[in-house]
Image 1: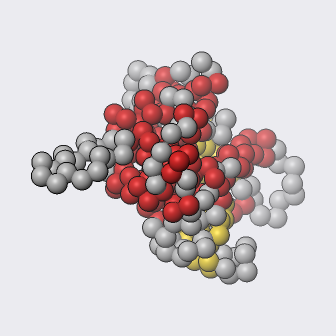
Image 2: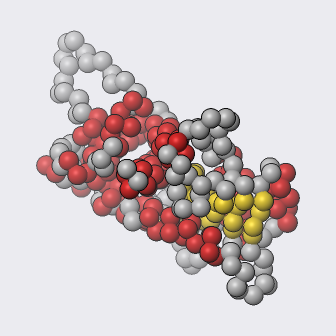
Image 3: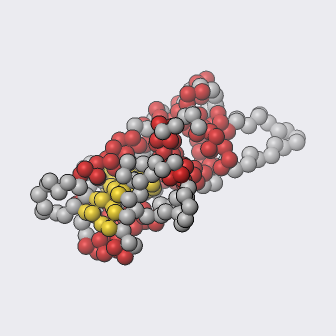
Length: 269
């Protein structure tokens, strides 16, 4: 297994969250189970390169791509990835590296070549099958939560579910933080109904309005979410959706968000 496939510090944070391995049978135990760290390297290889699972080189990764896929499936069903992301957000807040004052939200289209759940005709890609990534980030572009929907879903319909999906972020004394103070968004979120709903949650909406000339200055804060999408889609398995199962693509999204958080931690240490 190539040691550079798993980022420094990732394995130490993933290992405590993994479900216990099944016990081997006493009679006819079969082949030894591939170590979890090797399987994680296989997942990382596919996430970074975008190759098909069956084409992952076993001599490079240390296991077959099918084994890595099965481990991704098992760990996704066990809820490993959202817990990993929440733990890293807590570390960032403890290190005073998380700014929840000004946050930004947006959505991004990706093609869905294999179909599956949460796929719809994309209005920006000639109605071809596609999906959407929806993302909320802090002032610096650190992902707070990410969601997957069909490509025909309007961004604003996911605004409240995204806010509800932000985990309780601990790390400092007092109550965990679960919401921003101000939320920046583009004209796709320009609905007075949602402004009122944000105010009810004690969140100040800062949303661009249709028909207003450019130059409002909102882009000085909102641009970080576009950069975060660029970070996410540098993982080639995410720039085009190949997984038919929506939960597995969501799991890869959450793993990528965790890696972005880990990079921020490593830059400051």
